[in-house]
Length: 254
Image (cartoon, rainbow, N blue to C red; front, side, top):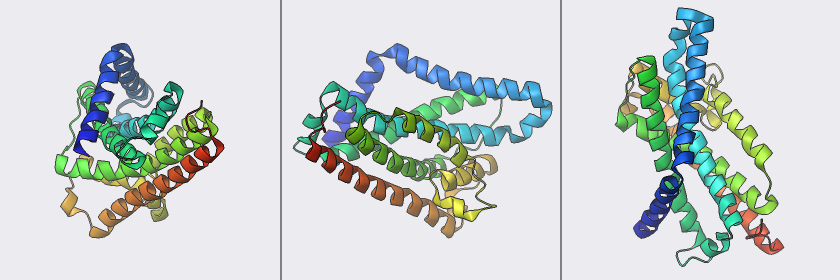
C-alpha cells in the first residue's frame, strides 16, 4: 500500500510539473478570485467589510481544498477514461478499490497543499493573522473533506456510466460554497450536510483559537460520523455504478 501511495503521489507530482502553466494558472485563478472579492468588498462596504474578513478567509480556504479534492477524484476518473487507462487500473494486482483509496489519500494531501498556498497568499494580501494550529486544522480539515470525497465518488461513478456529467459537476461546486457558509448554529440539522460541520469548527478554530480537544465531544463526533458516513456511502454507490458500467461494457469507453 505504501508503494502504491508513493506511485500515485509521484504521478500527481509529474502531472503538475509537466504542465506548469496550467498548475500556476490554477493557483493564480483561485487567488485572483479572492482578490476581487476582497478589494471589491472593501470598495463597496468600506471598513465594515473587515468585520467578516476572517470568516471569509477561513471559508475560502476550506472551499479551495474542497474544490481540489472533489475535482481531483471525479476528474481523474473521467481523465483516465479519456486516456484509455482506466481498465488497466481496474486490473491492477492490488485491486481497483485500493487504487481508488490511494488516489483519495493523495488527492486530500495535495488539496491541503493548494489550500495552504492559497491561505498564505490571502493572509499576505489582507494583512490579517489567524490561528493555524496544525493539530486542530489538519484533523478537522481531513474529516470535512471526507464528506466532499464521498460526493466525489458518486460523481466519479456517474461519469463512468454516463460520461458527460460536467453540468452537474459544476453545480455541485457552487453548492459547496453555500454549504461552507451554512448557519449550523441556527439550524443544527445542517451539520449533516457535507462541509457544514467542518466549516463551523474551522471557523471557531482559526478565528477563535479553539483547539481540537476544547470542542465538545458531540461536535467532534458529528464531524467524524458525517465525514466517514459520506465516504462509505459514496464509495458503495461508486462500486455499484462501476459494476453497472462493466455490465454495459462502457467502463473504459468515453
